[in-house]
Length: 170
Ligand code: PNS
Image (cartoon, rainbow, N blue to C red):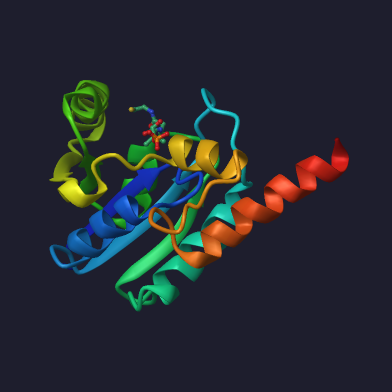
């Protein structure tokens, strides 16, 4: 039976921090599903489809093979554990940078274990990426700073064109 894990998140947009966690997690499992989850608490910058495209472009840019081993998908409604059951995954992967992340993630991990026996594997962020977050990347890009240290070129381009579009619309 293949060992399948799901790496969920908003990924709005994906960063080098997320990509590092995905690459490391993919070595631990036969199959890793990176899943763009709709978070009703957040107004996303990019649509789910755009986020999937950016993840695929980023994996390609970094030479991380997206195919049988890493799949990219979306979950727009319903419980994450239902998605896990649908694809035969028994584990979730989450990256954490600090105790704030762990405080946020721990109750979700406990609920997912309680609901369906799905375990969460926490992967510590590489210290090099400990300060990167999607929201800070969006803020820097919106203020016309360089984000190339934090995100792949495809994402940096998408952030720049999203800013240009919003400027045009006034
Ligand atoms: O990148 P984010 O926004 O921190 O990711 C949070 C996310 C999407 C992983 C979280 O909101 C989530 O797991 N949503 C799925 C809905 C669900 O199953 N909720 C109940 C158990 S936590």
